[in-house]
Image (cartoon, rainbow, N blue to C red; front, side):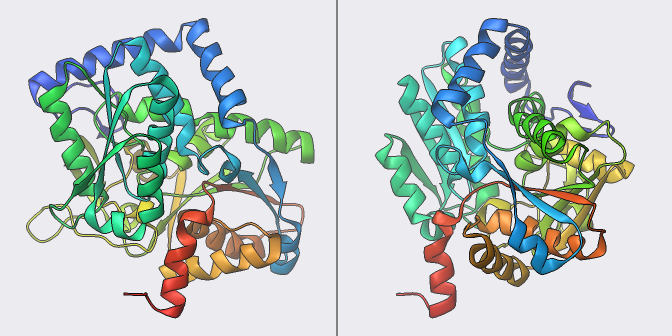
Length: 386
């Protein structure tokens, strides 16, 4: 294990020696790219011209007035090309893959948004793309599977374990170990061995870089709280990044009550890094289930684990039913259908707003749009066609 990529006791790189060498090359190339003005310029240009950044910070007037208390603003990652925050990181990493001469890109996906983003980026740069996805998630996110295939990706069904996100990560890591000489693993969340958590944070930090400037322009001050859902933790770490040093700004992560890694997890190694993890009686990662496939993970990013341990981050749970209610409320009051993942953050923001004063401000990171979830919600409400 290296001492690099540590956030307190969390993070690090617990991988076989051969893979450690591959990851060290990746870490070195990432550090060079970060310092290369040409790389950063290309990243910003693609975000502007292809992704559609910067996206708005929308005042949710009706939702705010309905709740009473604080003003609620929505950081509109749902308006990005492909419909979620995932594309920010996919573009950054695909540029790094191109820089490193990779011939083949692999990725894992739960809700399918990272898979779509990766397939999109690979199509743009003409690189072979293989996406690992749990069998169960493929059924409930069939539309995103079709999108990935339309974009030229090969989607591999993972039947092992529960057939969910953890199992897809297992399969992708196995592929990397076998094919590291020509393959780039485009990891979608702020998890995994070093340097992945730091890379994902770097590329996703554009979210808070924009929102911090936007809220000061609109309100003349920083928010009281920034709220984001946490599954693996990429949208949340991006939403928090530029507020870390602003101690007065509360950083609140919202996880599903059905997969409460931060609230009930213990320090353990999963997928090559140490984080707060839900374990069963045998000490193995515990089976999880959330109505939001993108939050269905028994661990969490190492920096979130550190923020929880130090108290800088606040982490709470929301039930699937509460998220479903928020999904409907935001749709009805603002004309914005959120992803079920994002709906967890909206649900908690509605509660926090009531506790705060009218001069207080909440920014909710609306990590994705709900197109992918409408069929699932319809079937939950009206019964499956099967």
